[in-house]
Image (tube, rainbow over all chains, first blue to last red; front, side, top):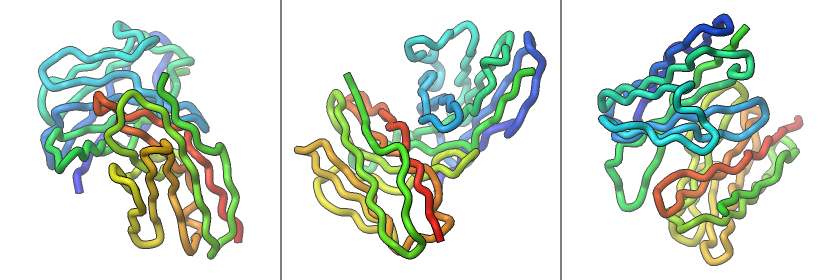
Length: 119
Length: 109
């Protein structure tokens, strides 16, 4: 099956610094990638949708200047948390969709997630 | 607005059967997904239904009724490793996934 990697799996950073998280589709070309945030015992919250070569579409309430998303190639998207604060501590998960459909099947393949802790 | 409802938590016994229900209201509909998520891990795909009826896959089955905006995930012969959260997600008219809050399933010996 399709594999999505995410790096790093865990990161601890100091308040005020920036952190970059990478999401890669390893064996398929991802025309669309999604970035989610998940708080403990809560469901996935979609932050933004990015299509290769174009600007990301951010969900309401998500600061685009704080969460910078770049989808420079069909296999790589990055999320940079700028000027991180303790409230940004969370589990960040990316997913990728190939856009190649079998009928109407639009499955998203998830990366393993990144646990961010801001001290 | 768009909404997915599923129970917050369920408890079942090892070896038994459990049914997790999900109701949805979305702008358009292009199918319904069930994902399993263990604590601290990313979701993994379980099933996809776009037509009415039951899809069986081993110990897991998923059912969809489009007219009722309703789906369920049926888990048979429960094992301790099935303890996880089960996420229901509907694909709307823009092919975006609308996520439920997840059902935490606790399996007791």
